[in-house]
Structures are given as C-alpha cells and as structure tokens.
Image 1 (cartoon, rainbow, N blue to C red):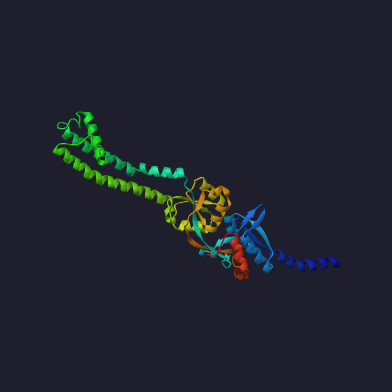
Image 2: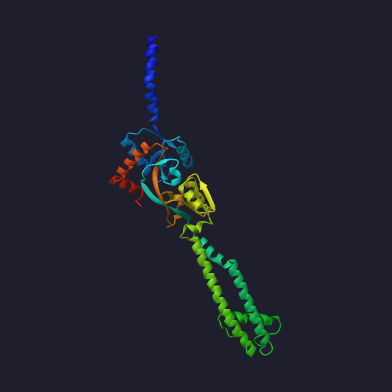
Amino acid sequence: MKRLLISVCLFILYAPLNARETSDTLVVAYAPAPPFIVQEDGLLEGINIWLWNRVAQDLDLEYQLVQMPFSGMLDSLRSGRIDVCINPLTISGSRSKEMEFTHSFFASHSTIAVAQESSMQKIKLFFSSFFHVNFLRGFLLLLVILLFFGSLTWFFERKANPEHFRQGHKGIWDGLWWSMVTLSTVGYGDKAPKTRMGKIAAIGLMLSGLLFVSGLTASIASSLTVNQLNNESSDFNAFKERKVGTVQSSEASDFLRTHFFKKVTEYPSVPPGLNDLKKRKIDAFIYDEPILQYRIKKDSTLTDLEVLPIKFDVQFYAFGIKKDNVELEQMISQRILEIMETQEWQVVLSEFGLSEL
C-alpha cells in the first residue's frame, strides 16, 4: 500500500514536467521555396533553413520540422496547430491580424515570368498584322479607289485613246492596271491618258491615292508596334486582360485580386505554374522575383522561360509565429537582427545568388 502511495505521488509530481517538456517542442512547418527552402534528395538547405537552424541553436529551441502545402501551412498557423512557419512569408496587414511576425530578414519584389517567343512565332506575329480587320478594310478600300479611278479614266479614254484603253471588259482591266502602276509610282509608261478629263482623273487618283496609302502605311506600322508592345510588355497592367498564374494564398494572389486581374489561375506551388506557362496554358506567371529567378535558372527544362525586368509590390519576408506567442516572436526577432549584422549572413545570401534590396 505504501509503495502504491509513493508511486502515485511521484506520478503527480513529474507528470506536469513531462507535459511541459512535450509542449516545449515547437512544431515548425515549411514548404519548398527555393532558394529559401531547397529540398533535394531528402536533404533540406537554403537561406531560411540555415537561418532557422542558427536561431534554434542559439536559443536552445527544441523543434520538430513538418512539411506542408503552402496554403495548408498558413491555415495551420492561423488555427494554432503549428507554432512556427519558416517559409519566407510576406508581412501584410491582413496576416498580422491572424499571426505574429518576426523581424524581416529579406526584402524583395513581385515580378512576371513569361515564355520566350521563338523565331517562327515572331514571324507569325509579323504576318498576322497584315490580316488584322482594320488592315483588310483599308486594303479593300484601296482596291475600290483603284478600280474607281481606273474605270473613270478608261471611260474618258476609250474612244480617244483605244491603243492604251481598249473597249469592253478588257478596257476595265487596262484602267485598273494603269491606276495600280500610277499609284505605286512604278511608271512603266505603257499606258497614259491623253484627254483632258482623263488627265484630271489621273490627278484625282494621285492626290487621293497618295494620301490614303500614307494612312494605310501608318496603320500597318501602328499595328506592328501594338503587337510588339503587347508581346513585350513593360508594365504589369498590360497583363490584366491575359491569363496569368500565381501561388494560392500568397501575397501575389492578394495583389492580383486587389488590382483587378480578371483571369487568374492559382497553383499549390511554383513548379506546376511554370510548367503550364511553358505549355502556354497561361500567358504569364506572377510571383516573388528571387524564387522565380532561382527556379528558372536551376531547372534545365525551363530554359525557354524568362523573367521580365518588371518589379512591383515590395515584400518584406519574415517567419510566422502562432498568434499571441509574443515572447517567442521577440526572442527570435532579436536573434535574427543580431545574425543579420554579421558578415556570415551576407555570405549565405551570396551563396544562393541573392543580395539585400
């Protein structure tokens, strides 16, 4: 009986300590996001992995790493099922209401990745301008002008100048041929009006034709320029009417929604979005610049993709902490600040091809 009583007392004494020891093990979640979190052959590396390991070691934190999809990881952090998210989370007002953020350790921008145009596609784009509705309308109107003045000149010349303008339907062709040669300034000289009215008709063709051809030429040049600008846009607003992709639940997704992008496809991560871009299922992929640059540079299957020199939506990266765990957030933030002041931090950034903004 005495032994049983002692055992019960010992259990009551040490049970809270065991519970506390279990609760002190932090659940730390991550999702691959190179170059910040790189997962290859079962190994984890990257800027954030290095930074978290350094922080945890210096603060003597016990933790358990758990891999999650990005969207599910944010939901788990909001609900308190995990303690820390070590992905490069963008600090935002809406997120700050649902989680704590450490001090920012890196700043970047959003950017746009597109598929490069092949030589054949550029040639196709050039010739497609000539089949634009406005160009075809202008060409048809030019044909009407040539036929009108050619027929009018034939009418005045058919009797006085039958050698150049024959009778019947052949004479209509003679008038059309003369008007085309005259307007194009080829000047064969095989046909020419001799009568006063024929020459007046020729003057009308020259004046009206030259003015119209100048306008038509300007229209073609404008069409080619517009197509080129649409193909090589230098402003993210040019993509508002196109099919674009981004990562689900990301800051880039919120940005596109608030800036009225109409055709947005969301992906669970970056790789499937870039694969769809390669297959031209979408016109562009919009996300964080360092992640897109790293993916395209490292993946040999994505060599036909490029990142445009467009930067917008400045983002400050930080670790996410479970809401109201202010003490943990302050401890980690202080250590992050101290690490960022070391030369070692700059070396780690340079190893992954990054530098401070």
